[in-house]
Image (cartoon, rainbow, N blue to C red; front, top):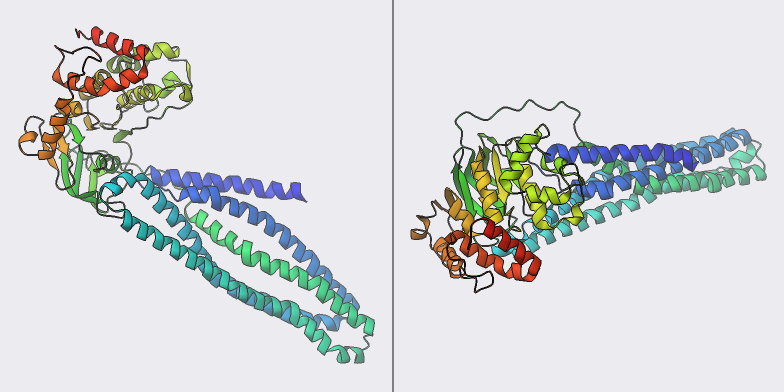
Length: 529
């Protein structure tokens, strides 16, 4: 039986996995990340698979056992069947009526499970910003309330076990009592004591075990199967053609935020923000850690939706793909050739176009060390700086006109980061940089300062006069501009590079002599004394 069962159950499970993954991707590319899909894929699909297989076995056993018992009663004495079948049907109908009400509460349990998964994912993503805003207690209370509601839903489902016992008593025990009560009548119609005992045996050892297994299986596993399968199908990928996407609105800014407010369950990280980034602009976003810079990048990229207001990219909702590319702090490199990684967003890019991007970003040495464009990449063998370089080149080649770099070069040294940002600034389109170093703000055309109270927008040269936080950040940055002999006194270097070298100096020393030689060689090649 089990090979035949597997031939039914396993393809069913595979189809559900495809539906869950397809539905999650379908919503995520439209700016609505489906974090609840993790619970459906790792938990709910397995529930459906296991319970579906188990219920097939239960249903098979019920049909054979009840059919055999009724057939035995019918051939022995048809009058007994009249006493057994009506309460059997009444009990099954009662169970069916209870099943519907229980399914409603079971669905609340499943949806609550997804809600907790989504809340947990949001909490983990925004934990730094939430802590910076002092929202730990509020988040604790909200998550605790969700957990308590889930526990209450579980108790409501458990209470229906008592009603299942009632239906089992009607369909399984009532026929036994009716046969005993009708024994004198049956004997007057020709039944022997052996026939009465045989009828009781059929009911007690044939009908009752089959009914008990069916009611318990359907009341537990069957209930979870019905609700969980329904939930999976609700969220599966729709079988509809992709809509034709409208192009950018003519004359619209590259990025526009209108009264945007967003928070992670506590005090908003971003509140009432209005921002216009013109086409071709180069904007740097600076501020203390946890102030909401990465949250702003996620809003512009359409990875999260604002609680209030709207975010537009070239006049269209930010969640509409095809207009922006985001490179986050943790760069992703996949197994495949070097060329596949570099040209992933631009598969039609020719060798000359890829070569120009490699030269612009300074990747020629990295490509050579990896063995050329056709060499296979082992992601685990690359350090974070090399992965960031590959990801930067991938974004540089992308056709999207708006590029968002969320500290995408923070593992690079100051010179390599400056070269990368200069390349993106020359690239046609709009550049938004979440700044890791103040030098990124110096290089930008405009700077947005987030300080938790009100944003400041302006040029680097003008902001110190109106923004105390920016003035303080520059002061701290310039105070570290003397590297105290670690790399030699960088007289003759641009002040921006000089200050960033001080930041890099400690890491260079920690990396050892080979890393120092590499950085010194790079500086000499750029004309540094």
